[in-house]
View 1 (cartoon, one colour):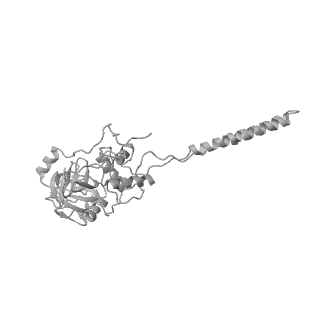
View 2: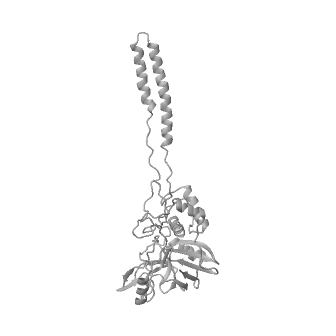
Length: 345
């Protein structure tokens, strides 16, 4: 049965990026004034899972669904069922009818010729039928291409999808026809931009969004700005009002957590900031929350940084996670040096 991905399968409602921080988060943050990725006195940061390698190709941990309760696609889908072996109906019928014809000929005083004729006729007719049936069965048993494009598929259509996403500005570093973690991140971003169900599966609705050219609109109109859309969980690299790259992201989940004997709230503040500090290395959290790949801090201990785990929903301690590959692009290709404006909304 075809599943239309673009509508929620949990509760029947479309899942759109939502603001995860409410009054509780703001009050908790103001009350504690404690947090930090780097230092204890700075706001809370992400990196809740320690990564031993900054490899951008690591398969994302966590679920691709918009809610933590959903599960991630972790196995390659079966692309087709094994074709069943078709038996020729003509083969069995030939034997039976031929022997019947021979029997009729030997049992009749003057029907040998007739019996042989009947047998030949039976073989000829049944053999023809058997050939037709066999050919038809082979055609019907050819494996069918799955309706949806999912994680693990390797095909030309995946290559076309990657090229389309790349042309639209979604972060895809290479068109290799293989649906891996990087392509999944780009599909998450497309689904978020289109207000679709965030499962990483390219069904009818997601393909339509790609065909239509759905791209989020920036909030700034001049200069080089790193925009962070909290509601849709996206990071946008913007130049003079034009989006040049769309990156899947995961920010603070609004929950409270314990670190070094204190209670903090996983909150990503909104507002206008600027990159004021950057660490071109794997950086360890001052609150022992884990490691961050090449972080760029824009307020207190809050940074945009690379991570091997970037689900489709808010999941960090306050920082803004992007994939390691996307963070490398920000550093090595786009730049975003100290002083680069960061607008969070």
